[in-house]
Length: 188
Image 1 (tube, rainbow, N blue to C red):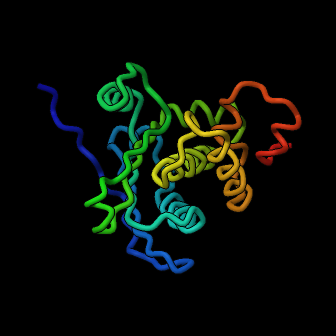
Image 2 (cartoon, one colour):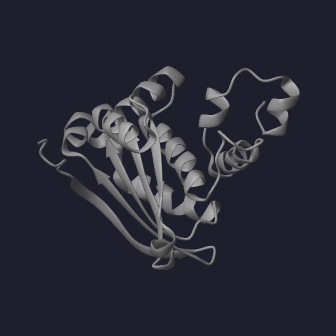
């Protein structure tokens, strides 16, 4: 039997009211990720961004974010999505009963994958983690880019601009689009 994953709670922001919505966030960092990436993780910055993004996305309730590695993400992806590979972000919406108690859901993000993507795209690890958080929050809000007709991509593009983020996750993973289609979702 595998020992449980030890977590280090590095920052927990108190509940805050912004834009008329109640936002409570928690950033959990696996000790191995903390020792490997250290100050580059910037939990206070990430927690502040998460609260702001919750308000911008009009998502009410508590959200916890686990910053973990590729091995744990692969296990989670295999267990919950039946895909035996690591991924960058997973979203776990709260069940209806938990929503009534003020929980929006949880996100899990691979810091290792985020670091590789940040390096490939020429921006900071913090920027990449924020892009992944925004993407995950939209899934918690009920959006699904795999099954919609562009609603999530448009919402992500608008929020990305509003929050000052680089090109969004959907935009850079979607097949090449025509100039007209890119303009519709707000990409130059």
